[in-house]
Length: 128
Image (cartoon, one colour):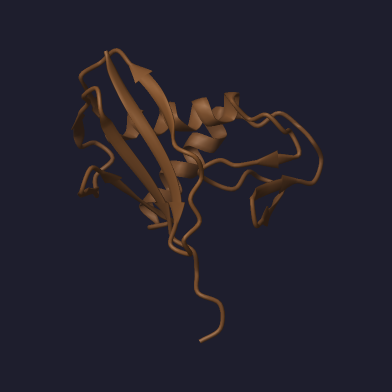
C-alpha cells in the first residue's frame, strides 16, 4: 500500500496543509492520481460555503482562502475532475512528483510509501 502526500501550493506563496491518501496500487497514471485527489478533496470539504479544492467550482467566487460558494450546495466530484484535467491542459497548475514536473496525464507514477505530489496553482500577476 502506497501513501501519497498531497501539497497544494500557489505561485504567490500560499500553501495549504499537506494531507495523505492511501492507494493500493503501486503504479497509476497521473490522471487517476488527480482524480483521486479531487474526489477526496470534494468529499472532505467541511464548510459547504468555502471550498479549498484544486479548481474553482462553477458559480463560486475566488477568495483568499479558497472558493466561496454563492449558494451552499453539493460539489460534483466528476465535474471538478473534468475541470481539473482541463486546467492542467491549459497550464492552470503544475504537478510535481518529488523533484520531477509531470507533463503528461497518461504518465505512470511509481507510488511508494513516501510519494509527495505537489499541485502548484499558477496565480496571475497583478499589475505590471
